[in-house]
Amino acid sequence: MDRVRRFFYAASITLLSFGTVVIADIRPAVVFDIGGKFDKSFNEGVLNGAEKFRIETGIAYAEFEPTDETQREQALRGFARQGYSPILVAGFAQGPALEKVASEFPDTNFSIIDIVVDKPNVQSIIFKEHEGSFLVGMLAAMASETGKVGFVGGMDIPLLHRFACGYEQGVRYVNANAEVYQNMTGDTPAAWNDPVRGGELAKSQFDRGADVVFAAAGGTGLGVLQAAADAGKLSIGVDLNQNHLHPGSVLTSMLKRIDVAAYRVYRTFLDGTWKPGVMVLGLKEDGVGWALDDNNRALITVEMASRVEVAKASIISGGIVVHDYLADNSCTY
Image (cartoon, rainbow, N blue to C red; front, side, top):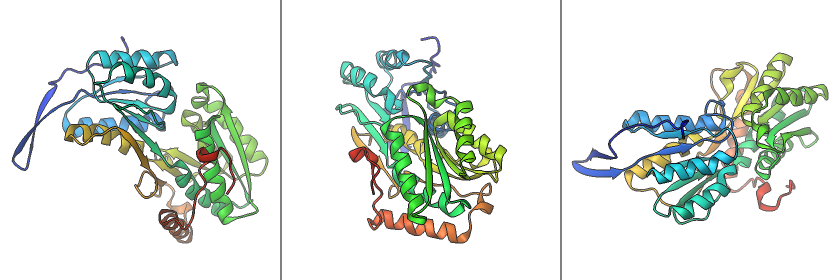
C-alpha cells in the first residue's frame, strides 16, 4: 500500500510513572473515512486526536486515506498483517469491512467510531449526536428572526436523521410553531464531499425564508457555511469547532468530540486500560456539546447561553428526553 505512511520507531517503549517502569507494546494505525483527513470535520477530528497522542508521547502512527470503498478492507487487513495495534477505524461505513478483518485477526485490537461491531477484539465508540443537536437547535430558534430554520445533512442514512431529529426537537422546544426545512445531500459516500451541492441546498432553504441552517455533512457542510456567509445568514457547524471558518456568520458548532475519542483509544491502550465493548459518549460524558468562543460570542446573548445550559443540565438529569431516531427510526417526540 503505497499511500500508507510508515513510521519507524521502537515497538517497546519505557514509561516512568511514580517510580514504576511500565513496558508497553503499541503500534498505532488509523484508517480514515472517505473525504480526506483535512475535511475540517469528522476525519480531521480523528486526525487531531491522533496527533495529540503523537506529540505527547513521541509515538508515531501509520495512516491510510481511502479514496474508494474497496480500499477500506484492504487497508485494515494490511495493517493487521503488519502487526499494527490498536487500529483506529473512522466511520460507520467501515463497519462491514471491520467485521471481516477483526475475525481474521483475533489478536489485533481495533477501535471504530460511529458504529457497533460486536467482536471480542473491537471497541465501538458511539455518540449521542441527538443531544448536542438539540442544543444547537435551541440556539437556531432563538437566533432566527423568521421562525424558519434549515438542516443540510450528508449521506441519507439513519445516523444523519438522528442529528436532524434532535435538531428539530430543540428548535420546537423554543418555538413550537417554527418551520424546519431538511435536505440530505445524497445516498452515496460522495454526499460527504460535495460543498457545491451543499451550498445549493442551503441557498434553496434561504430562498424559502430560513435564516439559520445547520450543516451536518462533512466536507459538504463547508459549502453550507460559505453560502450562509455570502447571503448574510447564519450557519451551524458540526463535529469540530467551525466557528472560525466564517466569524460572525457561524452561530455555533455542534461539537462531537471525535478528537477526544481518538486520543483515548491510543492513550488507554498505552496505559493498559483499553477494553473492547461499547463506549457511549453524550452530554454527560462531554462527548457532545456546543461551541462558544470569540468568533461567535457576539451572536450568542447571555440569555441564550443560559437557557441552553439549563436545558443541557436537564437532559443530563433526565428531565428532558431527547428522542433518538436510531431507537425506532421515527422523529416523534
